[in-house]
Each structure stands twice: as C-alpha cells, then as structure tokens.
Image 1 (cartoon, one colour):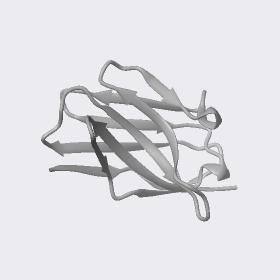
Image 2: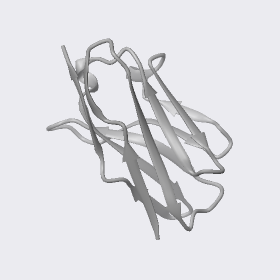
Image 3: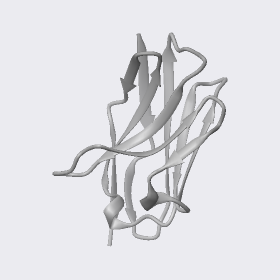
Length: 115
C-alpha cells in the first residue's frame, strides 16, 4: 500500500507564493510519475503539473512560468512551488503518484488566493 501526505496549503494574497510538498511512503516502483492536480468548486479535477522519475515535466498552460514542480527520487517527495498566485488558482490541490496500473491520491490541501 502507498500513502501520500501533503502539506503547505493555506491562504495567500494575489501575487504571493506558496509551496506544496508531498511525501510518498510504501511500496513504490522506482519508475513513476508524481504530480499535482487541483479541483475548484463546481469544476472537474485537472492536472496542474507532473514530473516523471527522469525529471521530465508537464504543466497546464495556465500555470506555465508561475509554478515549478520538482522531486527527490531518493525521498519519494514532490514539491510544487507556486508564485504569482491568482484568485483563479484557488482550489483543493491533490498529490498524485502513478506507476504500472496503480494510481494513488493524497487527501488534498486547500489553497486560497484572495484578491
């Protein structure tokens, strides 16, 4: 079994920064993809950014140039540095880990950006 524990959400003013962290524990295949999704009220969950074991990254267009995803393979952690935050970034952010046919989610952390 795999567990994902997130931290770092909170309330910030527009233009501010937050850093989300996620630590994975359990039986994890070394070749995997870790990422962050978000879900705003009334909207579908969407991919924000992900990064594979080789360091290749993907970002949703709306966060390019503002968010940076990084990971530590030795510690099975993934971070999301969020800068220049906008009110539309407000959502619950979920950590995700997938490998083979397995797909794991964290419990979610609230990010609220006030205007």
